[in-house]
Image: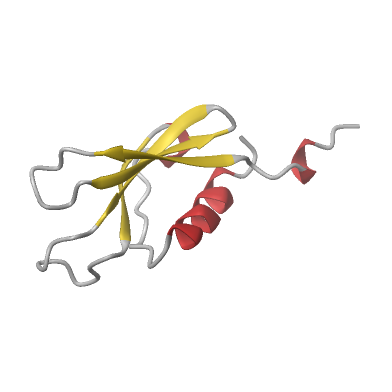
Length: 88
């Protein structure tokens, strides 16, 4: 009997600068169970509705093409990512 469904996805957020051609440069590589699955960028410019929130700049695998909301905090992003990666 497999207990894989009971294991929580291990998500690591690795800081990295991202060249977005805008003031939004603070980023995080999202690594889930050892695989790069997304890049998050902190919205920094005044042109954003939610400055300081986090945006999924790119998603890979199951997250490719997913429309994610802007996340007020990295903890919110992590919860959303875990829900959408469930079963990987």
